[in-house]
Amino acid sequence: GTTLGGSAAEKGRYFGAAVGTGKFGDNTYMTVLNREFNSLVAENEMKWDHTEPQQGRFNFTNGDRIVSHARSRGMSVRGHALLWHAQQPGWAQGLSGSALRNAAINHVTQVAAHFRGQIHSWDVVNEAFADGGSGGRRDSNLQRTGNDWIEAAFRAARAADPGAKLCYNDYNTDGINAKSTGIYNMVRDFKSRGVPIDCVGLQSHLGTTIDSSYQANIQRFADLGVDVQITELDVMQGSNQANIYATVTRACLAVSRCTGITVWGVRDCDSWRGSDNALLFDCSGNKKAAYNSVLNALNSG
Ligand code: G3I
Image 1 (cartoon, rainbow, N blue to C red):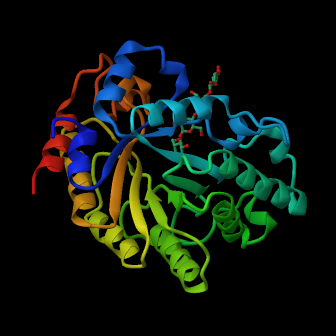
Image 2: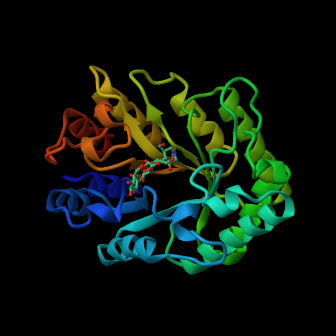
């Protein structure tokens, strides 16, 4: 293939990008987006603060624009994210206990139902595990409603959109470590008890090195019977950037249940990482060395 999406499709995968409707009027941005990618995710516009700015008053305008653009071009859509400790609307930040739990589950139900049938995979819960060596849950208002908040969210999402794959998504899970093992144990428990979970998202916000157990970590999740998706890939610019991008791509291709890769933005200047220049296109929309390295990895083997 000659594009990221086309080459990934030849391997039975998708290759996506995080987008924002604020750039849909930018010709350079749209040219690259439409040419290269066959999956989109909203970088911000399907999050709780955007979709339910006031309790019970939903706003799907920009999320719908992203879905509609994707569908008109035959791209699939990842949904991001139904519940997260960050980017909550102010009203939710002010709730606790059963009021927060009920509001959270209602949010999952209403948003998943609105987009029913249009989402390939939902990040049902984002970043609920703690960094560091504990392997346990992150403290948050949601966690304080009870340890079962994650499975309650997955059950509500399944009921609202039975066709979407339901993912747990997190960062600093780019190898076998205490945090990824905590998530692994949760997924194993969910599978054993019939809690509906289909996939694990490994965000993969990477620096100048990559853990030698990156592929083995993907494999161990796959071996639990869930798909794995690389959901927010970006890599700090440096002498190793192209190699790390290729290593991630090859690792995903090596595991049949690794079904797709999403980069967290289009051009370096679109990225939340600013001067890290962490993406595949420069600010003028030109392909970087890292782009060629990913495309070659997708086309080989
Ligand atoms: O749109 C407003 C603008 O109107 C306002 O003037 C400006 C002033 O602060 O803020 C703008 O909103 C910002 C928004 O990005 C759009 O650029 C928010 O402040 C800013 O907080 C928000 O950051 C996003 C961040 O999540 C929030 O936590 C990043 O774009 C987004 O890339 C980032 O994405 C997260 C994933 O969802 C989860 N994993 C980590 C990843 C990176 O942090």
